[in-house]
Amino acid sequence: MVHFHRQFDPHGIRLLIFDLDGTLIDSRLDLIHSVNAMLRHLKRPELPGDVIASYVGDGAPMLVRRALGDPKHDDLVKEALEYFLGYYRVHKLDYTHVYDGVKEMLAAVHNSNGIRRQMAVLSNKPVVPSRAIIEALGLAQFFVHVYGGNSFPTKKPDPHGVHSILRETKNRPEETLIVGDSSIDVITGRNAGLWTCGVTYGFAPHTLSLAPPDVVVDSPRELGDLFGSTLRTGN
Image (cartoon, rainbow, N blue to C red):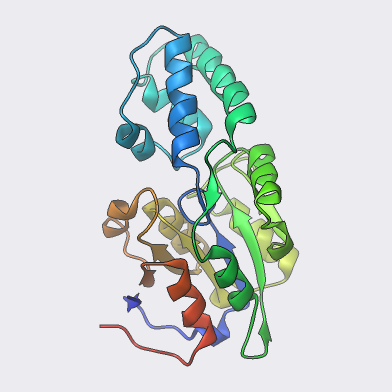
């Protein structure tokens, strides 16, 4: 069900910026397996999948640091991160898949009611695997830009990446919507003056209560319907 916290007209949106993990793709298992492979390599006990999934969202260095219990030795974190990235590079598409309805939603959002919109991806995942996954899963055609957590000097929720995308696409904040599954994406949008959309089917829907987005959707289809129909108000 679509629920508005702050009303806006979807027909006025010209640019959508999407998060990747937990928003467009379900990469949960491959991230869990890669973190546990890293822990095995360091002869540490593996972690439950739900715990690892709760650590996702702030980029690979923070994911690894959290999985290690925030150690004081940077050399350990560096070694662990290198192993994690190497393992994930090979296994990033073992189980990762596009959420049901995402491709149809992207097509509907891109061109509905005679309005052509631009779309971009801004993830905190490193940019090389982000682009490789988007290409392999057949999503590249939809996006004018794909950026990762190492594309800019800072990561989300810092608005630097959003500002760069706005400049490159020549769009204004008030005609831009950021879509993500966590409070990180909502805070990023707020910091850049964007409209915000939270999705409840991803990794961290519980965090949306910490920073309520302007609109919440329960499925990719609902987001597509939002742009393909007349403006509706939520309850």
